[in-house]
Structure formats: C-alpha cells, structure tokens
Image (cartoon, rainbow over all chains, first blue to last red; front, top):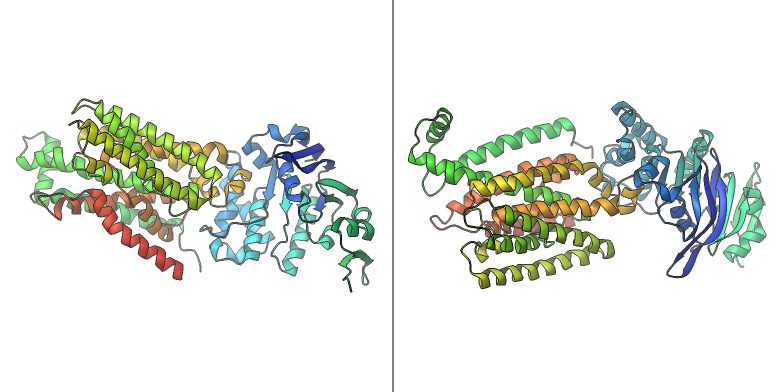
Length: 257
Length: 336
C-alpha cells in the first residue's frame, strides 16, 4: 500500500507542529523519519496513522483519504507501534500479541488456525517464542518493546508505522528488528519508522529529515545524511565517515574538545 | 512463571463456582427467622411441581426466601461484573460503581421513580429513572475521564457520589412517602424488600445488559494497553467507552432498585478473581457473575441471621468485611 502525504500541516492552538510537508512511501519501501527532539516526528507519524486530522492537506492510503476510514478499517490497513508501552498489563505476552488480531476477528473467512499462526510467527520474529505465557508486567522494558512489535506484526497490515522501534532493545535485538523491517519491505509492506539512531536510518531506502516541523531534506540516505546538513539541523558537529571494514557509512558526533 | 490460566484450568474454576453457588443458595434458603430442613426443601420442590397443596414452610420459601436468595445472587452478579467492566474501561483496579458515584446517581433516579410509583406495582418507573440517571452519570464520567488523570477522576467520582447520596437522602426525608424506601436503603442497601415483581423487572434489564457487556470483552482487553493502542487495534474507544459505561449505568440503576446502594462487591470480587482465572474479560465477566452471586448470597444470609430477628443492612456488612480485606490485599500487593 502506498502512503501519500500532500501539503500536510498540523496546528494545535495556533502553534504549527508539522508542515507543510509532502512525501510518499511506496509499497515495499522503508522510510525513516529522523530529526531532533521536538521536530514533529511523532506527530507526523500520528498524522500518517489517521489518528490526528491534518489542519490542512491530506494523508492518502493508495487513493483513499485516511481520515475517511473508520477505526476498524484503519486497523486492517496500518499497524502502529507507539513510543511507550504500558507496563502494568496483567495479560500474558501471547494474549497481548493476539490483541493484534482484533480487527481481523470480524472477518469470518479467517479461521482460528490462521489467527494462531499469525500470533506464533509474530512471537518467533521477535525472539519471544519462549515467553508467550509470561505476564507482560513481569517483563523487562526490552521484552515489553518486543511484545509490542510482535503485536504490530500480528496485525498483519500492508502499512507499518513504527515510533522508535529499537527503544530499550539490546544491540542484537536492534539488529533483529532492522532485519525484520527489511524482510517486511521485501515482502511488499510499506514501513515508516521514526528513528533516533541515525546509523539505523542508513539502511532505509528513503530518509526524511525533519526540523521544526518542516522537511529539511528528503531523499536517499546518502543524500540526506550528510555531515553539513546533520550538524546544522541537530546544532551539534556530526561526522559522516565511510565504514572502515565494509561498504556503508558511520555517523558519529564530534566531541567539542 | 508459567501461566496456569489455561481454558481447562478455568473450566475447573467455573464448575466449582457453580457447585458452590448452588450450595450456598440452598443453605441460604434453609436459614432465617426459623430453620427449614433439607427434607422440607425437597418436599416443597416436589409439591410445587405436582401442584399439591402447600404447607407454611412452602409459603415462606416461595414468597419470601426464594426471591430474596435469587435477588442476592442477581445483585452480586451485577455488582461484581460491572466492577470488572469499569476496572477494564478506566484501567484501574479502584474503579467501582459505588466508588465512582454511579450507584448514588442511580439512587437519585430510583428515589424519584419510587415516589411516583403506586405501592405493589411492577417497579418499571424506578428502574427506568435509576437506569437513566445511572447511564447519564456514566456517560458524563467517561467524558470527565478523557480530560483528567485516573487519580482526580476517582476522587471526583467519590465527591459526586457523596453529594448525590446527600441529595437522595434529603429527597427521601422531605417527601416522606411510604412508597419510597428508607434512607438506610439508599445509604447501605438491603434485600429485605425483594419481591417477585422487583426481581422480574430488574432481571429483564440486567440479563441483556450483562450479555452486552460480555460481548465487549475483547475490546475491554485492548483497553489495558491504553486508549491510543486500543484505537490503533480497531476498538473505537471514543465511541464505545461512553456506550459501555452507559450500559454499566443502566445495570447499576436496576441493581439499586433491587438492593439499594451496596459497595465493595464490585471492587473485591474481580480483585480476587484476576489472579485465579486471568484478566481476559470474556472469562472475567462470567467469573464475576458467579463469584459475585456467591459473595452476596453468603453476606445477605449473614445479614438476615447474625442479629436475628433484627436485620443488618447488606451494605453495612459488605463494607465491614470488604473494607479491611481490600486494604489488606492492596497493602500486601504493594510490598511484594
């Protein structure tokens, strides 16, 4: 599914939080949204999710305006990983992941076995297969984050909107998530992720650099993630160097001294 | 920590619960102003099925004790399951129809409804008014919750509850009508006036209300992740939360006509059940129906017999037993 933002603006009490921004993400592509704190990344993601209504402009899923879709229609088209995961959840990991299937329950052509298969493969994809029976409140924050990612996968939607998916994850599980996002895109899904770790963004097809709610740059990772531009937007000296061991680049802060 | 709350595990709990419920209801039928033996109960059942002329005990059983025991079961089932629903909706174990002011709001409607209903008639008007004020309060509380945090929301409910109870009390005292139950009924609740007519009307309202709430179970489960997450997953919280708490208000309204304002059952029963049968509402709501019925049948039997021939108001006993128990459980949980 293609997601298309055209001239989207979002104001709250007269203050401009986002926009105007325009861009599109094609099916099978990965789009990273990066930028400093308060640049409007999460707000933009909520607009893309159809959760906030743009003050001006529009968000379209293929040709349908996202704000015209019902809550349950939205839930079968896009899955959202929020920035914070509730801690005091008494449900088990498996029960929470199965909640991702809620919007599909209304569809009689999906049988019990298919629901169970979705849940099991989502648990495996985030390496939680052995923890299905644990209560979420007993998990570490990284395990809780992986539970939320599995729930998003179980929702089985053509569009995935992920707000900082690697938060609280150790380095191995961060890489697992990056590889999982690659596999989802290869399978034809559209993945839009807000990222803080700029090095993770280098593996994305397109990067959107936000600064004070507007597009500072939009293009391939090589085009957008340059030393000059990042230093300007983040207001801190940032170096972009070639990886010494393999192809690709490394983005590092340059300490003041 | 492997989960033991499997479906098979829960079937054992449900089976056990139903057996215990039938047991406590039978014992409750036997106890009262005078004791009735099991053989007399068997005799009563066979006589009423074969249309044989009855004895004195039959009259006591069929027109006094049976409606009261059924009323206690229905009241307990309602209070406990709406407690579970409110806790799921408002994402706090402290949500309860009594604590959040729903019962007091329904009390206002019930008092007005009783005042304009002839004595002895079917109490459709009190149930209607109580359901209306309960539902209005519920929908209002959903709007309030959207704008305040959980702590302030609960305290606001407590404050409103006190005010509404006071208004009901003043209304009851000023109107001083034999049609309206006593102030005690609205403050502490009692099943001493339960008749078949009250039972019929409240059952007509409560059974569909509880079934509807049960049907929202999977959506209530999603609410545990947060409003935003529930909406992302396809549950329209903005529309369905007011609907759900409106139905809760209707159920609470009927329950207040049945037994007055009774607290603690809705807090305590789901609190005890969750560790046993899990938090999923499709299980928790029927579990609360059974366990709430058991709890109130037992407590109402104590209310009738402990100080016989005097009767202890039901809500006084639920508070006397439930208050310290709840405090103990909350404190114990916070230290582990």
